[in-house]
Length: 298
Ligand code: F3S
Image 1 (cartoon, helix red, strand yellow):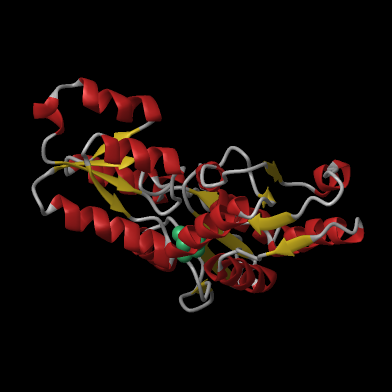
Image 2 (cartoon, rainbow, N blue to C red):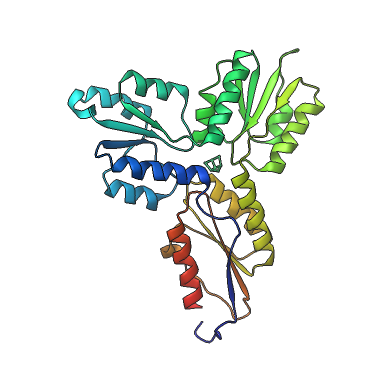
């Protein structure tokens, strides 16, 4: 590596990378709340990034891992819950969780991303109108569970073309199709097309977030030029995994790292361009660290 001549290689960051608007807003909210001196809980980790969560835990923020843990807060006695704030993360939560927080008289600070909140309102309205809600997304993802929790009528979650092909609705049933904010745009279109070919009376709302599309497109553009691509993000972050998938298709030498410690780069001399992108839960500090490391060491 030491043989590489200075200026030989370019390190370029994707045009859109890192914290999206909603995640930045949620993380900033937690820091603001820490300053109030109250006991701060987040319902689930505030972002899918272990580094960020660890830093917040060091500042006293407690992560509630489940509904049961939230319910137990009440059991702990009033002295434990006085002056407690529960922050809802950008992914949002089912309505039931908001109700529990309210019933307990805990302070609720809702940092649900406004784009996710919009989906909650769409499905709530669709449910009230008697429509069958179809959520296109990963059924195990908290955002999808949250969206489901705002549906009052029938709801189906699916994520593949095959599932859409098998899906049958009752005759005359109106359906309302929404998507997880981080869902792949083309895959969503394919699924919607299947329902439209079947002739269902559907209303489709593309609720894929621009931040996701922008990140995916700029990652793809950069990966198609790059000799090596580095994708930074949390192991459990679905949008980071999607970026990795997209980049891997364009660039065979794509690395998925969570922190700088995971990066074990061997760059042959022929490498001219190293591209870097990062999931929506990756803080700027970490992106800069990786960028500087590659610039200085190669
Ligand atoms: Fe919100 Fe889009 Fe981020 S929905 S949380 S701004 S990826």
